[in-house]
Image 1 (cartoon, rainbow, N blue to C red):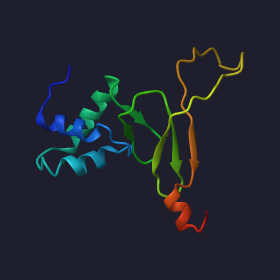
Image 2 (tube, rainbow, N blue to C red):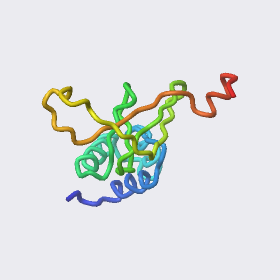
Image 3 (cartoon, rainbow, N blue to C red):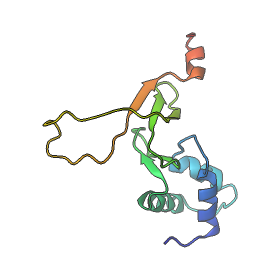
Image 4 (cartoon, helix red, strand yellow):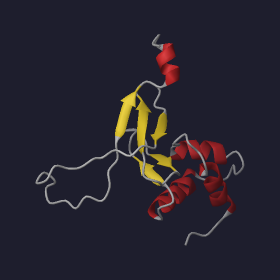
Length: 128
């Protein structure tokens, strides 16, 4: 079990209910205001531990940096191709790998990513 320091509690508090799918840098920028001597390594280590403990999803939807999702329920994501905003999609899709096409894998889960423009970027680009 992870030792609960004030810094780790602040990180967990920032993540609780957070729907912005923040990166470690986002978490650090917010939490370091309260803890100016906290290192980015503390944030990375805490996020990694929370991910390994199943309390946080580690997302690799952003090629430049990992993003994190405190909602560990099964769900999918929609990503804005313009600004990078990520939103949750809580809808079940009936996905199956065709028989004989799974290379011997035992399927345990799936994740679907949709890409498009968020409402704000759609307006900026003149779309309706």
